[in-house]
Figure 1: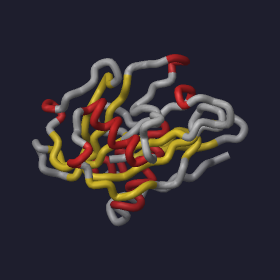
Figure 2: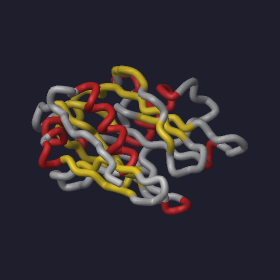
Figure 3: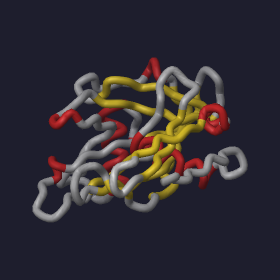
Length: 188
C-alpha cells in the first residue's frame, strides 16, 4: 500500500492539503502481485484526490494511510503489512508535500471491497508484471519553466499518471529492480 501524509505548508490548515495512496496486493483472480489503485471524485479546485488528509487524531503518515485505506476501501488496518515510507514529494498545492507509505494488503478482490462512493470514484488493479513491461511505460513531459518529466503507465483499461505514477515509479525501482527498468530522462 502506498499512502500519503500531507504536512500543511506554513499557515495552511490540513484541509488545504491533499493526499493519495496506492496499495500493493495479490489479485484474487490472477494470484499475481498487483497494485490496487483508486481515484476519488473531484473536490474543490478540480484537483483529483486519491486518499485523504491527515486528521488531528492521526499519529503519523502510516496511521493516516491505514485509516484512509479502511475508510475508503474497507481494507482493515490490521491486515496491512507496512513496509516503510519513502521520501517526501511536492504536490501542486504550494508548499504541500506527500510522504508515500509502502505496504502489502494481502489478497484483494476488487468486487468485494467496501468502497466509499462519496470519496472513491474508481478502484482497479494492475499486475506489477504488466506495469513493468516496457511497452506500457511512457513519459509525460512538461515544458514549463522549470520543465519536468513524469512517468505514465499505459496498457490497461486506465492510464496511471501524475503523482500516483511518480510514486509507483519510485516504488517499483525499489521492489522490482530486475523487472522494472523504466528510466526518466528530461529532454530540454
